[in-house]
Amino acid sequence: MKTAILAVDPRKPSVKILQAAAEVIRRGGLVAFPTETVYGLGADALNGKACCSIFEAKGRPHDNPLIVHVSEPEEIARFAYTGDQPLLPVLSERFMPGPLTVILPKKEIIPDDVTVGLSTVAIRCPSHPVAHRLIELAGVPIAAPSANRSGRPSPTRAAHVTEDMNGRIDMILDAGEADVGLESTVISLKGDRITLLRPGFITLDDLLSVTPNVEVNPAVLSTLKNGELAESPGMKYRHYAPAAPVTIVRGSNEAVLTFFTERLKGGAAVLCFQEDLARLNDPAWSERVVSFGSENDLQEQAHSLFDALRSFDHRGVSHIYARETASNGLGLALTNRLLRACAFDILSLEDEK
Ligand code: TXA
Ligand code: MG
Image (cartoon, rainbow, N blue to C red; front, top):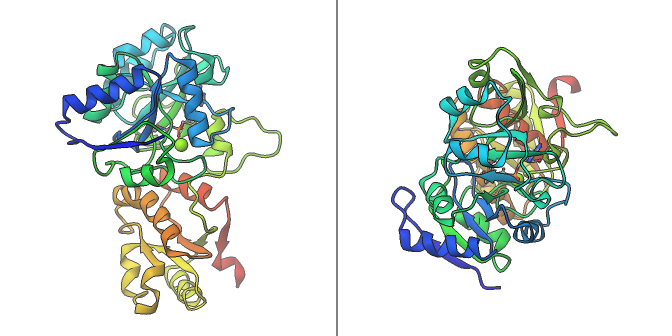
């Protein structure tokens, strides 16, 4: 299959191009499109066969359900039962359109191929103008996981999508870099209680400002024990991983930088903060030292993390040592992704003494 790659203005996208993309969706094809979080791989959410081809193109396990994207928050009630959800109006008012995905009891109209047979459906209303207009023009909700091959870091630029999906899908809409850089916050609702299943740009504190009854699913920061059931199936897989294995290095600033220096001398690579670059400035290492942003700028780190992880694949490195980042605010989402990228391999320098 030849993949058409079309550039669009992120703020004022050409209607002609979006019409063509919408036509591909309507006839059961696959279109990768930008959202404010990451690029998604879209198909008509009401067409089971089209949704099956998403799983094939991604190499996605068949027990991992897709998110349904709608153009307006009001559309949610067409695809899910919202009657018994006292928190939904305020969540919708505060955070939609935007990077929040809500799990709700599904209506019959959503095919089992989207939800992999679950009784619930994940729904989100993206704020990116291209995503918004594409869904509107398609006239159907769009099922879309992140547009990466399964297990790889989510794409934050069209070039990442091309790397993984060229020849496997009909079209890629290139609207530059995604703003947020990490996937949406995923929550489930039960009465007046929220369970945080996947942290994202909408933080735990944002959710706590709506209700004190927020529970963080244990899988957010730890690996599931054998036999434990994943409430959000996507959380059980190794994820976001570059080709080389990753280890998070924990310790004092001095200890971590000394350790990084030693490993760089041995040929390994380092994922570090911008502030570390001055110390790790030997020209012999320049290809193997990648910053994902300033230590105190969590938004910049979120924006750059997946791009930085992917960049190691072009550098032929055998092992990546990474900085541990904050776990408060947006740091919870960053830490969640880094823990999966390293398959929970953490080296604590303090413990070694
Ligand atoms: O920002 C995002 O959410 C991006 C953009 C494209 O919208 N999409 C995305 O989709 O990250 P994906 O498929 O990579 O992640 C969806 C997550 C998975 O962890 C999946 O298991 C979970 O949502 N999920 C989907 N439906 C669910 C359901 N009914 N119950 C529990 N978890 C569900
Ligand atoms: Mg994904």
